Image 1: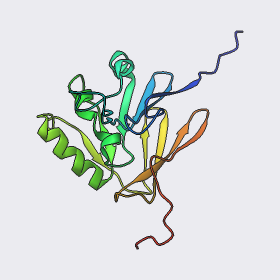
Image 2: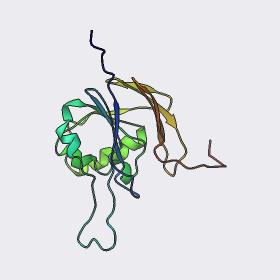
Image 3: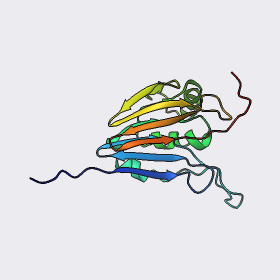
Image 4: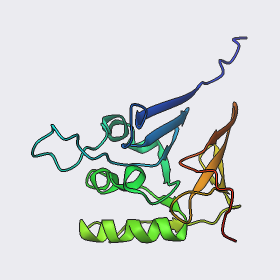
Length: 173
């Protein structure tokens, strides 16, 4: 009897690891993919004529049938700004807090992409299931309300994805 090989969890940063901007991370296990954030970057001074920079999302286009959803940590451009460019190729369900989704709605409307979009509001403390992944939303302090970290439960262990946060010694409320 052949021993069943255990699948591996793949964590693929498609952007956001070499500076500020283009934050997008893929978590893949078997036939399930979740995306965390989908941001853009602003060009350097020497990039004349370039208005914005988006991450290379070819991997997502090639594996769109595996994608179970897009989870957002907060509403800054470097975390949500590239979503319209993803949606021009295909749409997926998006999960975020009220303010994050409100900002995103305006962006999708501006690009003529809001109709047919599935935006699911979540709150800190809530847990959702996307394929094999269970994702808990954890409130964090940041320069924008509604920011969350994620506790992603996978078949091979737990991952904490902090998103952006700041340590605030005098938080409000």
